[in-house]
Image 1 (cartoon, one colour):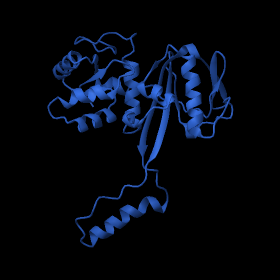
Image 2: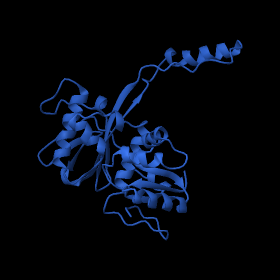
Image 3: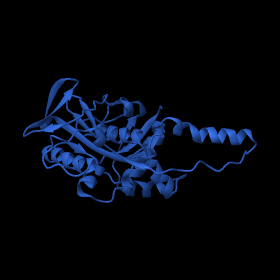
Image 4: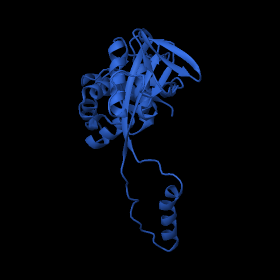
Length: 261
C-alpha cells in the first residue's frame, strides 16, 4: 500500500469519538466508520495523497482529535516478534528463553505494551476443512446457482499482547501458548493468568506507552467496543503506538521521519 496515513496521536485514543468524526465525513456512516476503525485502529485514513491527508488531519484536529501523518510503508516496519513459551517476572525485570538461551529484560527497557482482542472462527482441520467447500461445488455443479451464504459457525475470542523494548526487541504473548507455572498466585484459566501477568508487567513499566485495550482488559471493562478485526489490525495498533511516541521527529513534506505533528 502506498500513500499516507492519518493516525490519532493519543496512545489510549478511544474509537468512539473517531467514529463519530468519520461518520460526518463524505462516504461514511457510523457503522462503516466503526468497521474501518476495527480494521485500522487509531487511523482516520489510509493510502491518501499528501494533500488529502493534510486536509483530514486539519479537520480532525479542529474536532479535537490530534493526529499525525505517516507514509504507509512505515506502518509495516515492525520488529519481527519472538514468541516465548513463558515469562518469569522478577523484581527488576523478567526472563524468557530464546531457544535454550535465557534472556533477561529490565522493566525500564520496555517502551510499549499493547494488548489486542478479536473474534474468529476456530481453524478447521482434516476433512472438516474440506467438506463445506466440497458441498457447495457439488451443488453448483448440479445447477444450484443461487446458494445461500455459508453458515457462520461459533467464533473464538483471541487475545494477544506485544512488548517492545528500547533496543527493538518485540515479544508476542498469547495466553494459550504460555506456561504460567512460574507465575505467583495462578488463577483457574489461561485468560485469568494472562491478566495477572499483564497486570504485573503494566505495574512495573510505568514509562511504557500503552493502548486503551490494556487498561480495559485489566479493569474488567466491556471489551466488545474495542475488539479488532484480526491480527493484522493488532499489528497496526502496535505500529501506531510506536510511530506516535513523543520521542519521534515531526513529519514534514520535505522528509518522512516517524513522529507526531
